[in-house]
Image 1 (cartoon, rainbow over the protein chains, first blue to last red):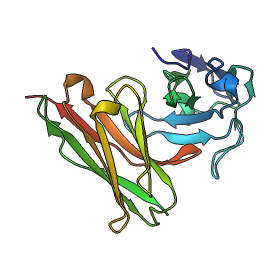
Image 2: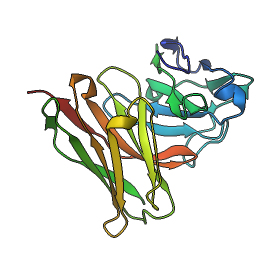
Image 3: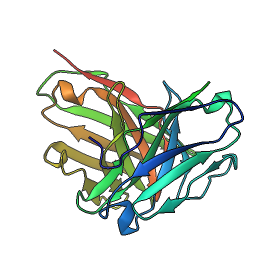
Image 4: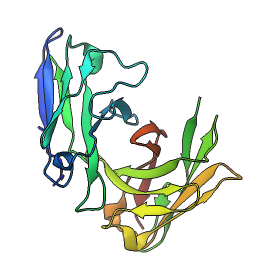
Length: 111
Length: 115
């Protein structure tokens, strides 16, 4: 069981907005450690999508955003496109485990 | 641009040692942390450990007793050894640059533990 909890799956129609939650505790997100998000198309390596809670690397569309609040963070995707269908992982640091941890991943299906 | 490439045996026998190397091309390995991350088939990501170019390491406590990492700046590569492997260590192993987030990833290499 992952230290960071994500819903196993979410879905949405093209053009819609979806959010993926990432719930932690006071040893990780709540302690102020940054949250990062990754997109993984099946069969490929994860790709950094959001870093430092809400920053997008060069080349990532502004349809992706990542607010953080308290012990949770969210990834919001607006204007859903078929190419967004992938697995999404949140990641942070956990002081009680003394290491970097990932959420269990969320599968996004574009209907 | 900077690229990472994992290499090593795809099949390791139980109780033996898994050895992987990650070669960094298109840029220097120096002054960064470099991590190993693995993913069993159909499952999530697990951070294994990281190494700085000075040789300083941090490891996942659950794997620490079995993990050895090294770096060779002259060859621009870093390595992972995981000892006493079992079937539970079967996974795709990724190397990644650890700069705040894991901002660059290798394509991954599948390692199967089986006799």
